[in-house]
Length: 148
Image (cartoon, rainbow, N blue to C red; front, side, top):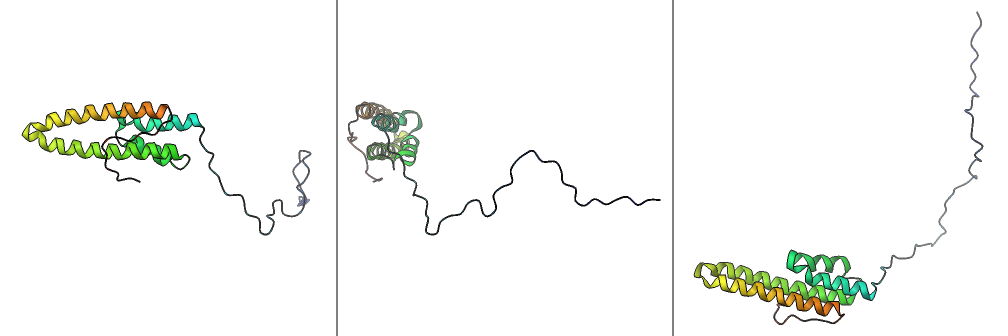
């Protein structure tokens, strides 16, 4: 009997791909630091849109809308930050008023204060939205300034 030949030099066929060049492929030069990430500023139209959302979103979402706008876009624009902080402060004030009105409902007057507060919050949110859509600043007539 003959022994089977052991062919250790077998190489699979290759697809005409040139081998990579010798040495490391990516070298960082000494002292190289990538440039820091810079946020792109918002366009004037985007500033008005985000400011508008900080106010009009309170009708549906309450204080969540200006809080999200502040966290997402507040660093990019001083105008958006000012509108969202103002709206957030007003919504915190309104929430405190709702809690007090709910407690006063046991004495019947809370029903009226709750309704009056709801109407005032709606009207002021619409006025603030109109001001924001024009690119103007807006200050709510009564609001605790808790967030700066």
